[in-house]
Length: 474
Image (cartoon, rainbow, N blue to C red):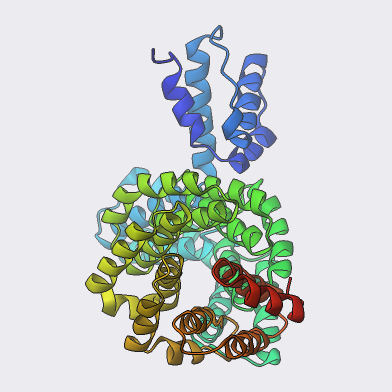
């Protein structure tokens, strides 16, 4: 039988812990029942597997009031909601169709929006359009009010504009340049850090800096530094600085990836499930990260259940980067659930349909998953043929001087050559040792290579055991 509070329970199930942290910090309830309900929602958001029931003896009108109160207070600080309103207002100005109530609201917002507000820069530009609108219509009173605001904060606006221009130039180098010298890393790190931690500038500029700092640290495998940044960001989310469900979902997904890289899998799982409570255009990306964590925890059936349930989202997505990522992890998940034949058929069919797109976007991720499935199925000759046909080893070697380099395909290829009698055991050992030495001292890359060697060890126990022991890579 459907609960009388089913709609309210569904509403609460989509709320995030940080939303409740903020709501508790601002509440001034006079009724004990209201605070009791809010505290229970707060508990349930943090314990989704052990939710406690709501008190049915409390009047349903109280629950209705609480739902409205939560929605209204989150809406007040939601930067995406504000941006939608601002964009609609700008459209009305540019179309010469702005209504008097819109003008009143725009003027009222001038008392609320400061240079530290998230969309201060966008608000400033809309006011510039509005001032021009007022000028040609000879409306001196409102013109003077708007001009005063623009004059008072023009230095703040131009400062944020310059910072964004600097970030744009730096971000191109961070994202597109694959090889950096240490001085470049330090320069970009300082630029992005200084902007993010500067609480005297607008939130949008600060958050852009955070995103770029995250990319910089991920690319360079500086996850301990990233942890420190996210600890600071976590506090900001309990206030009204960067709030929207979209931004929170992104934060949870990034934290899940960070904890995954640090091998803190319980935390990674927690944040991974939080990230997929809200379905946006990045949902598949967040889901892939979660499934990776579940597989590493040995929760293979759960990972497959989550992926299969998300196939409708896959069909709707036109993002090939995410689609290839999803398929790659689906193949891995099938292998983990002892469905190698199905994994190989699926990968083979996807390769035939999207070969060009795979090589354009995520060829290494796709082929490592595909080859892993083939290795588990002991199809060694097919691995050799696949690697040769698509020239995968030269492609992988091209990444050698980058922080992303992992010789996974070469490890599987060499092991397959040994199983097919192309090389002997000594040649295989030397190849393994060479590839281990190539990745340097980075512990995250060592961990990933060790995972591959553990897979190979199931078919070649003596050789891999000797290599791991002699090189002390455990």
